Amino acid sequence: MTRMYRTLPYQGGEPRAVAEVVNNAMNGKTNNTGTTTLADGGATSTTLSDERIGYDSIILLTPLSVAAAGTGVQLPHGLFEHDTTQNFSANIATRVALGVEESAYAMSLASDRVTVDYAGYYNATFMGRFNNPLSQIHNAYLWFKVNGVDVPHSAASVTVPDKQGSIEGAAYVNLTHPLDLNANDYVEVFCAVDDANVALTALAAQPTPYARPSVPSSTLELVMHYPSQVSGSTGLPYISDRQKGQATITHLPNNVADNTFGYIIVG
View (cartoon, rainbow, N blue to C red):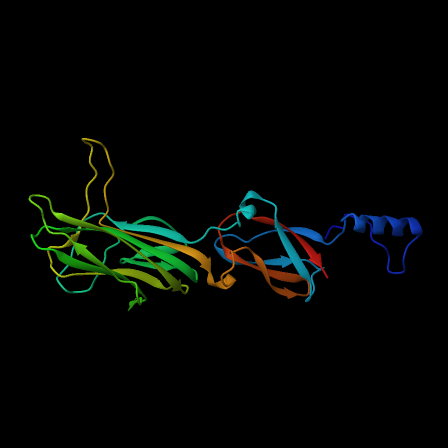
């Protein structure tokens, strides 16, 4: 621990030294400050070691880097899709395919299931396009499951128009629902149709008459709003434990190397 400013011996000091110490303290120049960098690699806590910390110390944090100023953490998020048309048997609940991981942080895709690494409150958004090649209107349903269990009130009903001439009926769906997830929970999207001809349809990329990318048959976006360990706060790092000579800083999963904070210890 580096002492930047003069301190006095316990038995006191001569008047000039006392005046210097008092004047420094009145001008905010004290020896109760330091810096710390949050642990990375997805860590959710960092140990702050400082012999000045006690059980009742108040520790104030302030960002000292661009990463720290932006809360210094990256919220878990992912975007998953499927690039081919999906057909379903009539009146049978079927898991929607998600074969491509476009991007993911702190979550992973396997067997059409997205598993999260950290507990928190997430927002799930599903997007897709139903096609109906028949001359009658048909219905489709979509909903979320967590760990194989239906999420209450998460279902959407989609009315798919009938075919008009040579143009198949189509209906786009955008389904959004909040999810309270624990670490290692997995999320699935399920679908049911009342006729096997109704499908989630993918469209290939086209070069002419204008270039456009492909349209997936299904897309799932999963984003954490805030983690459970900070109980609905803004997600800023906070002091969760104090002991003699050290404290624990709890924060969102951190994957940033230069996430540096200054701190002041009071008491």
